[in-house]
Amino acid sequence: MSRVLPSAIVFDMDGVLVDTTSSYHQATLETVRQVLADLTGVTADAASSVDPSWIHALKSASGFNNDWDCSAAIVRILLSPKWRALGPLAASERLADAGGGLAAVEALLGLEPRVDARGTVRDYFQLLYLGSALYSAIEGRPPPREDVLGLIDTERPMVDLAILTKLSVRRAIATGRPRLEALHALHVFGLGSAFEAVVTHDDCVEAGQSGKPHPWCLLEAARRLALPAEATCWYVGDTPDDMRAARAAGFVAIGVPANDESRGALIAAGASRLIDSVSDLLSAGESP
Image (cartoon, rainbow, N blue to C red; front, side, top):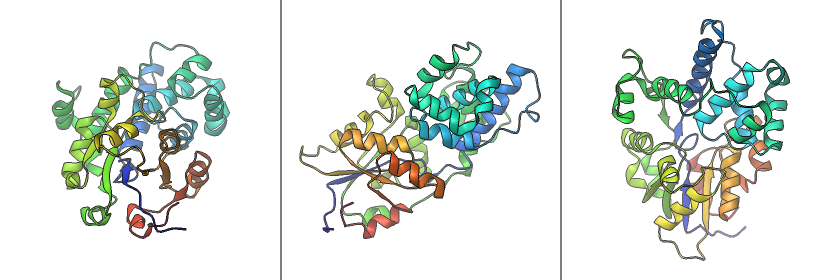
């Protein structure tokens, strides 16, 4: 393989730059438990047996890169005895065959007005993830409760600034995080100066574009870097939708598997190579 570096590397944030295992994933599980408890009348403790494998299965199904949507989909499935009995893998495969995302959930399970990915589910998720104080600052309104500590505080960086600045290429971020949450993480972990452009969920919404696996946010990151048309870009992500978005954008897809089980899913979704961490890119001058 030739020792040719790309013109730019665009990074996903969660699972690549920031470890969100105990934040976003835990917020999803706790949101599902709380919403199920509200809708079924059981206590949250009684609904505590939500299997984390539902998250990984849906993330592989495409269309659930957004954690609000993923949370809402799990609630919908677990409210249906038939779909719950299928288990994570079979249910996610059926949703994938139907195109993935909440559109597939509604098409196959019907409408459920009690579950709103932009209402009840979103509010629960944001409170659990951000905590009461940051909820008020980011959401711009008083929190539903004043005594909640945010799971965001459990996040840890997966790379440091020195590693990123050693990469002798242009660098940007294309993430599904809301803008203020992305900027908060970059500030807290001191990584902001490593990137020339940051494209977020809010940018997609403001442009009327879909999030990943749609490639718009990746292409927008490249546009903001003012790269020439012939430039080669890599996209580093940790989910199958990241790989699909990279392929659709014409980028080289670099996967960061969370565990052994996810390696095959990343390759099946189009990853050209897998790395264990961003630091591996320092020795990755070889083109994938």
